Length: 545
Image (cartoon, rainbow, N blue to C red; front, top):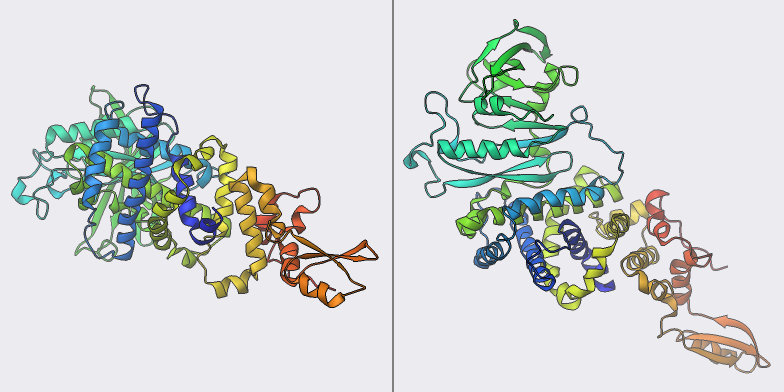
């Protein structure tokens, strides 16, 4: 473990985050414990493989698709056939559960609230990846899928998944499968409505059937912001449009409208028009963006609604969202397991995003220091994970399934110190890091990972190869006693009575670096690990005088 913490800390962190994100309990009562462990380990391995597809997109963003290895599709199909018989839509459950389980890591304070949208939990549904032939085009029969010949570069693909993500957590919270055709679009909208929860604000961005969304939106406290694309809802004006302000030189108007739901009852919504200029819209003439929302004006005014809708949320994410709905991912698995294949990539996305959040918050990294972190992290996990699981088999990791969330958070913060993406020169300049402080941090990390062996690591200078003592009579042969001090601890005696202990300079430096914090009533190792982060740089070397 010490070697992997020193050379591949990202693999250790990825393993712990994956165990945290996937329940240790069996998927169903019909699944034996051993079978569940085997399924879980297989899922871990495929998640690590899925990180490679995300890393490939980060390295080569100009490539349209990511090619998954052939064995990925075979393993996903086998996993689908064995696990999905016990729980329908198991892949979506994995993604949604991972967000709930990892929430203490990305938001460690229980009282921490979202602040972007007046306390709402944001949910962004981006319809950009949806096939052109399956988008709402407006007019009569707009929900019908276009002929296959009009699907452009996607003649073979007739289904896919759309990720729903939380931009504040930078995590995928759900996956919505879709297929072409009018009936399938209605089924997709039913899945969307079933996913809405109270306290959520959904930003629906794409050419969806706005009429069906507005009329069928559940009345359970969830809110939405949707633009009028294609099928404009049939509404009646309840008030005249009134100007609410301007975004730059572009006016924003608002009016109350009534829309009949699918049962014939009248619902009241806010209709907001953003009158964009030709320069601002990027088009040849002025354009009007019409937005419908059920968010009360007391919580979000018209200008805030427009800002939320217009903001490019995906560009602020640390990882590419389109890796989940990639053609290469969907084509690698048979159609029956396509949703599970995308779910595994989404799970890998959440694991990587959680690791980045922990590292960034622990080390207080600037944006430029975070740029290369996901590539290095994903590549490091893929390179070291297989060898780590040979050296440290699965049974060695089961102890972490029983740890409380607070202990896992503490371990991740310890590991984050070893994932500092800054150059060695900058770390030495900014933190005055030395071999002594790095050894101390490594000892604290190992103590948190292996608490049962904490006493062994806290006494690192006195490991078996250095604990041997030699007894020399200093008065009779002082030079010989000094020579032996470079090889082992030397007990110095005079007239057969101990008077001193000789140690080498290296042992003395290790004593200063690793024992000083534990010499007074076993001071907390957590404080030792984060002393240089919270209280400023580590002080210089202590004088030997």
